[in-house]
Image (cartoon, rainbow, N blue to C red):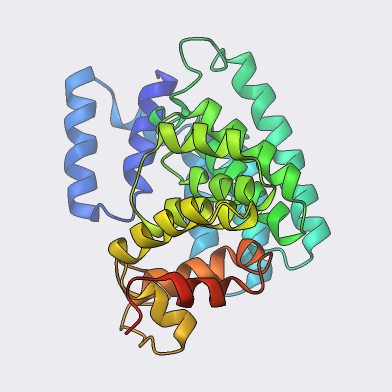
Length: 289
């Protein structure tokens, strides 16, 4: 069976936003359209691998989950999600990064062999089901490197993600903006901002922080005003008057207190690089109430 079609069906099966009933309808429609035998689809190494991975995700113990994930990847190395699953379960930071690096190297060679790293494909990796897990793997690597304090290596990975996927579905641009501000690389930051001109905290704070670092107070105040306009809860955080909303853990909404808490937590490396920035924020914000 056509590998691209097979991957398309697998993506439907493992999309948590699609109900089992809806997934079945979509798959049947695809198979009917292309005249595919259901048995042909069900009995393939990749399908079997993802079935094992699903069992791993529902395993009762961590040991059992890892065992099933390893078996899934052994069944088919096209199931790169099995590596990402193991990485997520690994507690040792050294082993975790080593496992991911090894998996990414193998996956890249496989994708190169299957001619996905071509001029026509570079820039739209997340739009193809076959290369989407690789992008997720790079995004995971960026955050693991960041946890280790390896800022420049994190920058390199984020730049690679955006090179391979211009739409940046994973949001690597936000981390890259913060890194450019941290490293005080104005030219690169402005180039990235021109490509993704958004008015939210993840884009505006790095610009504000950069110009604060460079002591360009005029531009710093300009971006501070835009931050307060985008999220009036921002200054409240530094004044200690912010009130937490009821956003579920790991979720936030633009313009809410949860966005501020998310930013401070996710980009602490940048915020901590300017320990006295809170005084500047309070003194220069138009919203001093």
